[in-house]
Image (cartoon, rainbow, N blue to C red):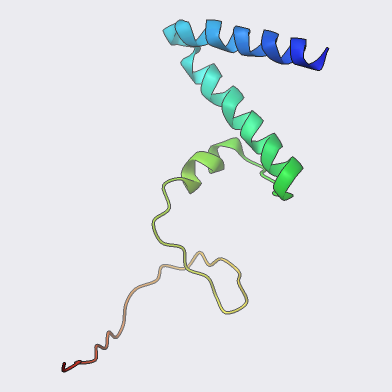
Length: 86
């Protein structure tokens, strides 16, 4: 029965994807499914579906020594290099 329900859901999603107006709904459904999977398997709680998309754009992540994320605007104050002679 579970396989039948999954097959029907996949068929409906494929039908919606064919229609261009159904694209935003398809993205929302796939994000919701991903969030449920993250909660089920990795114990990650996501409160906002849009945050999943934003996390994909992160290039640098700055954490404090306790591992908490900061919201301050960080900038490089000093930069040191070492000359290596071979």
